[in-house]
Length: 498
Ligand SMILES: Cc1ncc(COP(=O)(O)O)c(C=O)c1O
Image (cartoon, rainbow, N blue to C red; front, side):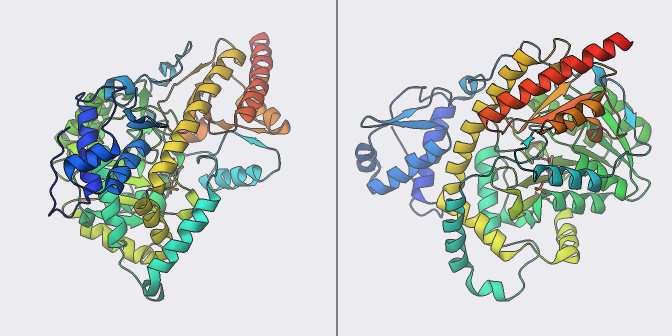
């Protein structure tokens, strides 16, 4: 195997080896199942220390591209090349959704329950003991011991910086690490100077929306979409148009119609592992969305909060195609590490960058130096990659278990999406399903479910549920069986009445 190395480059040698091997795997030059050279052989052939090769193989393993077989060495994973990866282990749905009921554009008038009320109700309910919680928007906690070790190391490195104020755009080291991660994982060619570290991606959304929009402007969202973004838009007095989500993403024909008729200033889109439907749009869909935005001079706010939780490779973000600084891209460590850290980031190019840094400064000066140092140490130590790999494996099992349980327990008239990662399955129920009564009955039996209404810009939409599948397998079995019984009872009752 030929691995050209640039020994004068700033990029560590182990990463150069990792990049080269990963390219060989992705291009198919190294086939699934093929054995990599032994650590000693590769170290000799490229003239590096064995530890460097061990480190490179460790990273490839954490990225899910290779696996180690005890005593035999490293092998290319069976699902490492793009074509094989796509179908690995995803349960084949018998009743997958077409998202048919959502074919109407929604122009929001007045949203129902406030985001604050929902947020508080959900937090309180989650704190009740023995609750099976299908509503939450974060993965199950894990690795507290790792966190303690990493936080200690981070604290020793952060040193004096803690005793003064820091740069509004965030620490250079963390921005550089995020830039490398985005380049390596998503093909986003960015530099640390295009990034702003924010208090979660929620703050990044808030800053971008405030910067691009004024009260009375029109903005487009997917319908359904993340209710936190709807609340931000409402708070700004922005008029919202909800374009229906189809199984491939936002309906682009309707999008063009409304771009033409209402001349909105911004499109908010969750292109990968959409919240709440779990849908990831194709490269072609992304290209077309961007070219429509260019045609109508409309900004795009691309929210990639669930990136990293994918079981299959996803297309490069819309931002990777952007040549005219039309797209602001937002990401977070909340869904992959922990929401409590409150570390997210925003990628803005051209003239928008400085203006957004100024907004960040006006809001809260900068993100906690401690939180940034912890995120940075996770990345530097390789823990982040290992943790993510572990999380994806567990989530994948739970996703499959949930789909199977739904297949066994839910009535025939119910449909759902089959996401390739993320945290949620979106369940569509027949018209006239008494959602509030089902939710109440489930809560009485200690099962929390999130109804679909808040995810629609008008707070109505069609009857639906968003179920978080990152539960223990036991909770999935028990919770879905109970929910299935309730759905059967209530749907039968509503059929009899009508
Ligand atoms: C799509 C989406 N974007 C952004 C956020 C905000 O996440 P955070 O501020 O914790 O990064 C969430 C949280 O649920 C989300 O689902």
